[in-house]
Image (tube, rainbow, N blue to C red; front, side, top):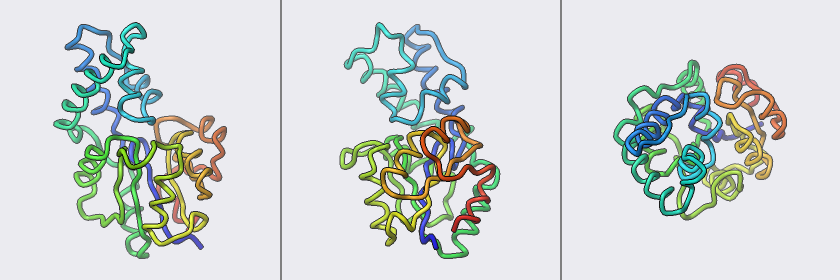
Length: 215
């Protein structure tokens, strides 16, 4: 019997790629640099906003000072427009409602900066009472380090083996496996079946409501 669920955000609960790509591309354009397509960004995201910016920049500009300057600019742009075109995936709201009806504690853990994670979640799911919503903070290393999800399990009042973790990337699957959680791969997300399987997914879900079968 599973007692709680932890979700990734980008590519799992919501399709955020258009707004993310827009913010980074506008930053690149202002600097006279080449932009990237949405599919490119689906492979760049997932390991923190700074890494996203570093991957988007031409290799010759990937120095710490330049990355940080571009990161701050893109983050400010994204903060003002992060919900313009971002929407929950089909079935996500229904899943969250079903879990709430069962009084299942829920958490969201993202490698997106903490304030942006909270802004997206509160804007997309204002009626959902998540026990914890956390993005990247100085207090925990980024996923796939399991420290943050282990802390989340403690806050949810469940042992890791009693918690389902739903994510769309190899980073998510490695995080869940390192923590001793059940790793569920979201096939509707940014990365796809091959990456999820290679990273050790315990099961692959075709739609959000499929998660209910694993409680």
